[in-house]
Length: 403
Image (cartoon, rainbow, N blue to C red; front, side, top):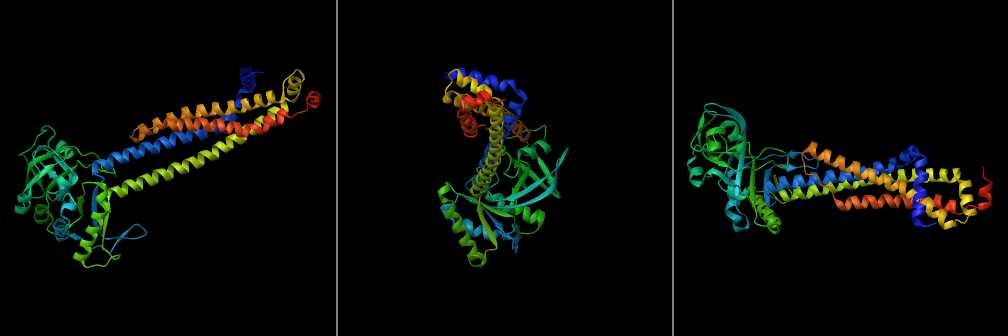
């Protein structure tokens, strides 16, 4: 019997019991579908997070107050000050692209016709260099504005849309925050979402001296930001910043009351988390494939028993043990591959649905599709070989006598 004849006979045998064949393939469908859908979803989520990290800047270094405990909490909070930022700005020199202290409050901003609750972010002129921000209209505030505690502000695009919906360029207009009137001197280009999903454009930026003296009345700051020109300078800059702050705050190494980290670390953590999730998905899917393979073996053993007399007749008219082995092995492989194709189709549909619901890119890896298809065939070969071998070793005479 040639190969194509064996395939035709095997498919005909499977179609005799359509329901049984479909249920047998179900484990393979679930396994391959889960692999394709979840691995694609994890890849899309990671790509979306990478885009958000790129919006923030992977070469960004963050200095925050407090000691991070093993439980993830922040203890022994000693606020950062303008002096801490000044020390870094003076001594880090050409190692970094600038140092910007940040203090954030939430207030209702008001114009003549609109009001909007938003973040009022006080910062240093270096912020434009540190974050690589560009202006859609107007200018960024400068050191002269900082020194004079000027009542000026910049609008993020979301804040501009809420406060001046009919005026794309509101430079020169007034915005009131509490009792302070601020003149708009610029509008920032869109910056997108932060890694945590916050809207970076829903902010009004003012000189930090203006916020501290005219709005909050204190000089504590929330965070210090700096950045390096290339990623290979990250560790050196972090170590130098930590050393300078230890000296300024008079704390020993290992007893810091501040934390120095980078956005790059967040990116690496995201890679680890998604890789771990993908491994767990593969483990669960592998269990499903094994269960599906056992189901194929079980049904094939039943099929051999049911068709013992048929096997005897085939051998009596000239079929060799190899022909019988090939026929039953093709049946097992066909069951697995049909399940694999259905699983891949459902997995791709699931990946697209998850991407649409979550709002991240559809990322279906062709290599993963090929691997899933190959693994399905491998499951059919591995779990179908023993029943096929058992069929090929039947004694023709005993098989003909089987009732």
